[in-house]
Length: 555
Ligand code: NOJ
Image (tube, rainbow, N blue to C red; front, side, top):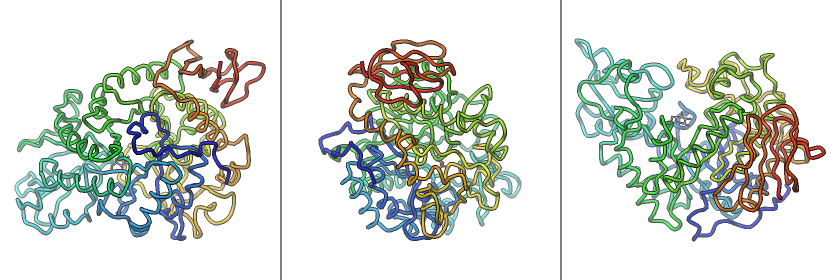
């Protein structure tokens, strides 16, 4: 495999700021690389692909959950926070993977899922075996039901993936679950829960992980008085004041202040990024404070249309916001929860959010006549090249560097995502289409993912997107990502940006070092400023940048 020009290790122990402008690559481990032929990707599979990650030129890997799990929600239902799913490997395999990544100069961020455990977690099993009102039940949220015999759930709340938000246990009590019944919510008012998560954070930090991605960081603390509001009442409540009973309550930051103390026990301090789908940038900033988690995902660009005005506003707002906290912005177009951006950008606008377009398309079962896959990828590359030039951290999702599209036509009987089975409108037919195992080779069993097939079906059209094909082709999406990431390392300097030119079709900004970035959102070619074209996402001819493309220029 080709060596990246970015070869020196960035792992200096004194570098407490490595995350500020990092390019972070998300690995969904069950779909990355399968080393033992059981159809599921695993940790030795990740280790075997470290040369690929190094050649890609990323700074860090974010590993989605790899813990023991019945996979009721793709691993976000954790049985044991301090272990590895035996199908994915062992703790020794984890250590080997971490060491291999570190030796390649790549940091490691792991996913922490603190809002809920799985129903197979030893604490939940204890809670089920223990009587009402017992300390074991106090680690979760149990309530008596309504109706003469408590046969109705305590409220009519609907879970995020559809279906009731409460499930009844054998003695008649009900427990709360924001997601599936297999994901009971913890009671974060219980000091034992708080203490246990500190132990988990230390467990992984001691094993050398560099940081944590915190799942639904905004949900942990709840205010649940005896008289609970109905779903309609909840829906009508303000989500921006920090007083909503279920989400983004101000008190959640007391937890993260405690976590920060743990992170700061290490050299360099452990990093954390919050996944917090909150209502306003101001609310998001609280999660990114240096006394808290330190960084928070912004999904603003991910939700935007491919549109200069929207991008301009979002970039300005986000840069302004991080000035308030001293954190850096995060930029992301794709992850394991949304339709891939190459696909979203190929769809006709839906008079609204770009993510919604993808949802509707997946729901319709995919390849409709109205999708332009080539255009989607062209725009995705333009958007990505713009993103990689922004000050702050860029989050990439496995497979986007190959230009993969969403797999929409997965047969119902092969789908896994609870969103599909619970009828949620969360992402159309669910999120399996962006979680299909990667194609490493153009032929052979499971396109080189493993020796014996893949846990989600890979379509025939994956072949030309295979790593083995793309790494030989200088015009491939993979070669483009490698060049962009290598150049980004050379060019990334102080975290500032100045606008040079902004109109309804073109955004042109400048980073320190005379790094000019021009994105043409329109379809007609535009003239580029003078200078050396370092990289472009599409043709530049006679100083003209083609439509729906980005160029990096040094002047
Ligand atoms: C957010 C994660 O990204 C998603 O995949 C998961 O289903 C929910 N949190 C519940 O943990």
